[in-house]
Amino acid sequence: MGEVRVRAKLTNAIDEALVRRGQLARDAIRSYEADALIDRGAVSSVLPVHVVQQLGFLIRGQRVAEYADGRQEVVDVTEPVVFEIDGRDTLEETFVLGDEVLIGQTVLEKMDLMVDCVNQRVMRNPAHPDQPVSKIKRIK
Image (cartoon, rainbow, N blue to C red; front, side, top):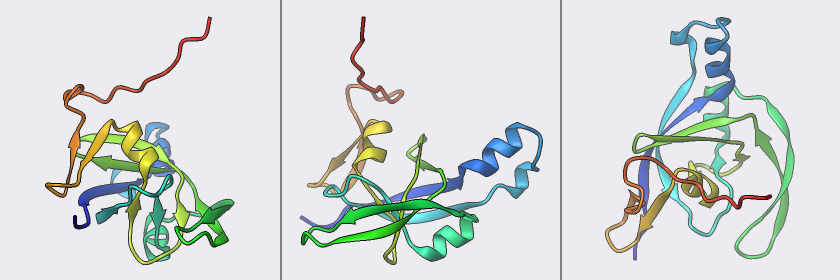
């Protein structure tokens, strides 16, 4: 099985909030179109430094990232990013490292998207084709 890639639009969530508050012009929203790699082994998503800079993010903190080989490294974390794939979107912070955009499991889960490895594509959950559905447990 080969790699799965998807077109993703990444947007600076703070810019979007400033537009909603009337503090920034809509045409000033910074965004980036990516041919993103789906990384089913990663929980979090990753943006390379050049994308972080283009989106105008400041670093909001650091987290420990653990790689597939078990190595751990402290890496920078971005301000909130809006991920848009196949007409669905979600908000998430990302790790800053590497040289390409990687989409992790939390973005896919929040957008209710599934990975079809055989056909090398991302698809909407057939049980919820019209809108994403998030499962939660009701607490009484």
